[in-house]
Image 1: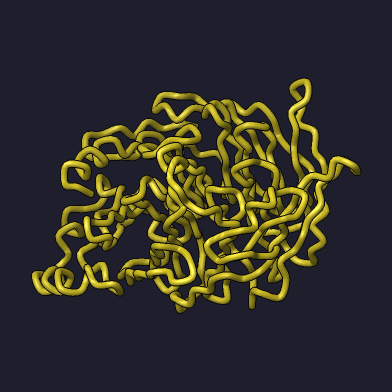
Image 2 (image 1 turned 90 degrees about the vertical axis):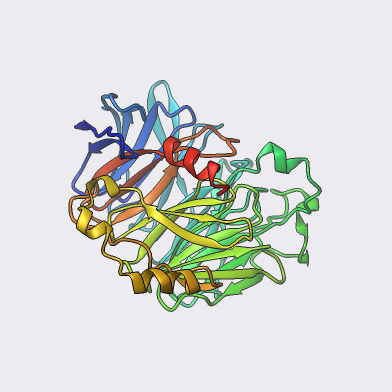
Length: 409
């Protein structure tokens, strides 16, 4: 089931064929177990990112009637949350080596698409096909999970949510200690992507769940569900929004083969778009403030980096170890010169990137990227990908990260 892929030129170190198709995966906090969505079940494996690790299935979570479309694993409480096309969500708690489900009241009439725990684990957000987002929290008085819904803001299916590092915005990485000491004002924000081609940022402040001070942001006093920013950068469906570790920047992708970087998120954000010549992307992951990986229909993760001026550029495909040499040299002198003039523009074309070729470790679309690092890690060197080919692939960026650091990227 596991295949070791180590090579001098490769960053993929292991591949595990777990199912015909995987719609999502999530790791526990110490990276000893992984939850994988396969059809209407969630399989939990005794796992490790180590190249020689053998993964054994420990548990099967069976409660959903249709495709399980999203899963997330809370690092502190150890709760697992799942969502499905059956319009239901469950929070799973491990009791005496048995995972016990608790039904979440979503109140939606279309499929649930994806789910994310907040950093403080007192809420989670559910994207849905009902053009709405459910922000769910636990009611101790009634001993159940309930939701407040952001309605009538999206024009179509909500494809992704991400929490801001301070807990009140969607798209999120935890706020790392170096940034926590700085005098940032709290931002009670939530970011979403949708098939109406837009990325939006909302307030996810819930009275009685969040502290009163969380309602005061750089946008002023805000209410739950208030739309703060709308980004109309993509000309196709929007996917895969994520915040940078500091929460100052975010990125998302468009189905028109574009990737968008937004800096100084606030009332006057600064946007940069890269139009790619390759197939569309589906998800992104910040490795640090200056590096990002993205994956999609090319079945091959792409690495991007920003320079000292804050301009983002395509660096390379990570699966180049299996790309034929003729494809690597496919760019002409003209396209290389063209890329030098336009590739660093605020809306640029990554013409210098070699096209992905058949023979990559993923042989179908990559739909999800997850970090392999403990909470609070400032720089991510390992991550995992899963996709429609039913594989989970482990990637180690140590060699490339060291080389980029020497170049100041």
